[in-house]
Amino acid sequence: MNMKEYKYPSWHRIFDFMPLIPLIFGILFCIDWFAMQFGLINATLFGDNATINYGIYLQGGLLMVFMGLFFLARNNEFRIENDGIHVSLFYLFWKFIPWEDVLEIRPLNLPGYPIAYAPWILKVKRMTMFHRIASISYLAGIDPIIVIAYTLNDFDGFINTIETKLKSRNA
Image (cartoon, rainbow, N blue to C red):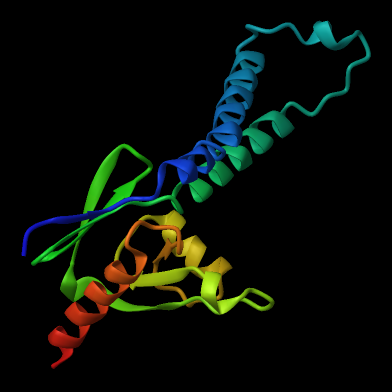
């Protein structure tokens, strides 16, 4: 089997950049906090009686960076080969997941969400901490998950290929 690539359509790509907004602002908040700590920004710019808790800059900045990376971890592309799946992470690199590390694939049953449009989850043994947090937030257990939206090109073919591989592995 040759490598088969699965991507989201171009109109879906605009949503991929939305997590960059909190990521960029979070980095700027953290830089601002460091600048205040080392005296590069004068606190009197806020007034003589400024009682600002500068730690909130760092906390808010780190929270925004965390949120940005969490949502960015949801936008994956896939390459399927005979020995496993390659998953894109944060648009920077690819992580290889051997078939032995794929635990299951199933639709994510969310209350009030039409099953036809429900995302699917690919549960794996190892991934980033953001994928593990996604699993916990979707109430899918503690094993990391990869969220697969129904807008993936050849979505049904992708699901069927993985299900076939998992069935042949278990047989």
